[in-house]
Length: 224
Image (cartoon, rainbow, N blue to C red):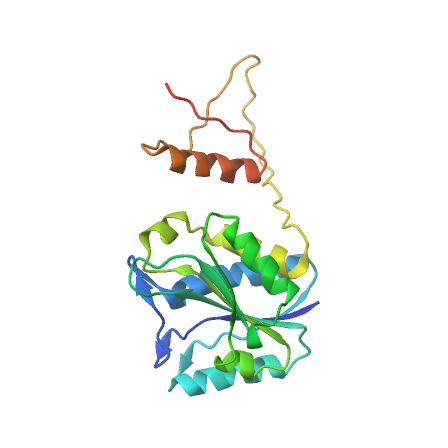
């Protein structure tokens, strides 16, 4: 398949993104979006980067994004964003033109919700320039609220990227373990414990366990 991916907002110019919890939207969208593009390419798909880093105006940036997508053969256009409101709003939502039920949009939404986010639904993005101006089936994802402490405490760029890629392609993201070699012989019968962190909150501990198990590592909580 062919994908056009836009990491929302520019790094400089007039098209500034949301801020919250010491983070800037334009930086976070690139962190997630670059992972999405790398993972899609690894699965054998064609990817066009429609990100615009600098623009003299918001309209200029939006026009450039649409032009980049429309210049190539594209099955799906995806724009990645984060929301902000009042530090209390939370959750994830996906916009399509006229709130059209698009399988890939629904799958991405459900996959991100499965990471622990509130489902804010599939919404009408008729008023969004990138959905009006692109020829491909277009979707804009609001991953979560950047000004929400609850949302950002769960945020993991790699998990978000995996959720998006799986939603778009239906192909599970395969994580290949790094093969390590060592010249140091192992001692038979000796066990080495690896600790990934200590938590005062049981929910956070359970989330870490889930992340490790999702990546194929057996793990458990040691109460000692």
